[in-house]
Image (cartoon, rainbow, N blue to C red; front, side, top):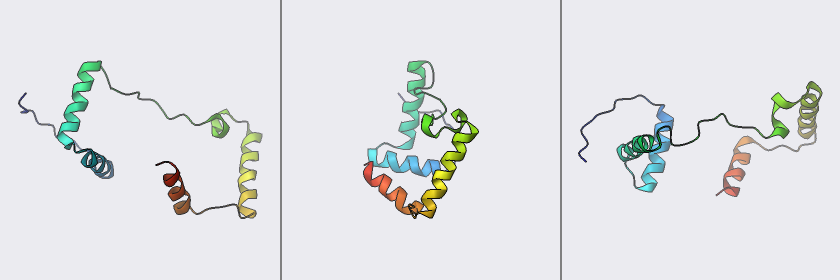
Length: 101
């Protein structure tokens, strides 16, 4: 089918770049990916994936904790800092990425 319709849209530049990087590795041009997305909308009759708020595990979901439980978690964090059980963010994220390849 000939592609003759044009979409003009604004997106977050860093999101666009990240998506382009992934699509490049997959060998899929951005226009093809958008076309695939629109086709899936028509085939499924809606957004082709769940659109939900992320769910935090109950153990760290402050909305499910009492004030005392929140204070306990905070105190545990302060205790870790005082005991030197800390890691800078760069190292923590690097270790996370390495363990989740």
